Image (cartoon, rainbow, N blue to C red; front, top):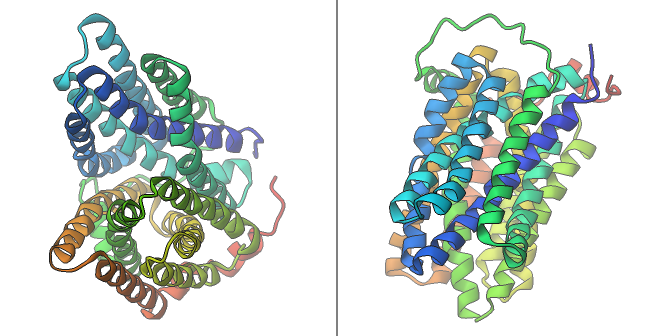
Length: 407
């Protein structure tokens, strides 16, 4: 039986959780600076909070398959809410110091990643219960990711300008609690999949290794992450620092977020049943964006490149999520998604390290063109590697289902 409340509740949970994560990334360093006055310490807390992400993604994937994706989503958001609220409680009772900041920051990070993975694995259940095509659910989710990237930090900064930091901490905790409540009450048809026989935490990696198309998509995903991290964290900031125009850096990142929202919306509206066409368009957009950005020419060419990159990201995110959801066995879905997330978190520091090595012996422009060459290599590989097109393109009956009205 189809329901009309499942999808709105799922999107509410996704939006509030994403906003909570975006907000705490701004609020926590702000609070550290308020209490310690040490900018280096703010960086230390941020780094320490990021370290457990890969471990949490791997372990969380196993727990999703073991205890259930809805239960894991709810427990993760409750844990995240408690970890954030503990900042306010400790501040009012014992007083926050460096140790508390690190402990609670790490604790929050341990809950955030499994919660995000659990909501991702719920897509098929949400589509089945709501009667909305899987591609469209993934498209709406992708638009929320772009919106959170665009508006989340800005809204958090605005709240910090109006309210005490601890008040904003409580609001951030409330976002995670609301996400937990929305998933807990969301009508959901039970899965009809048989329990998996392999209970090993490594089953996700094993399944990826034995599936050539999944392995190819993983290579493309990791290649993208290796290139994105130094672009956002090194090349663009260094370029706009050289121009003495930090405000333009914010505008280029906003251009990327707007492109992501638009790309996800276009995927749901214009590419129903044509995933391979969307895959081709996305990878071509990435190549175009890399060349535009590599020119390091002022603002407008780079902003155009970031819009193109956002459009490509907005197209690729729902494709990857939908393809994995359709092809990975239900009983292994948490571990496969968790494996993808864990490896992606390792790829970003790897990209930053490689860029540091390049810039140790060359200038920024050379580094930017190295990134462009990497994007061309990843794009060509994604389009010409054998065996991927038939895996990405939906079956004929699925393509027709995308055009049926939601029940």
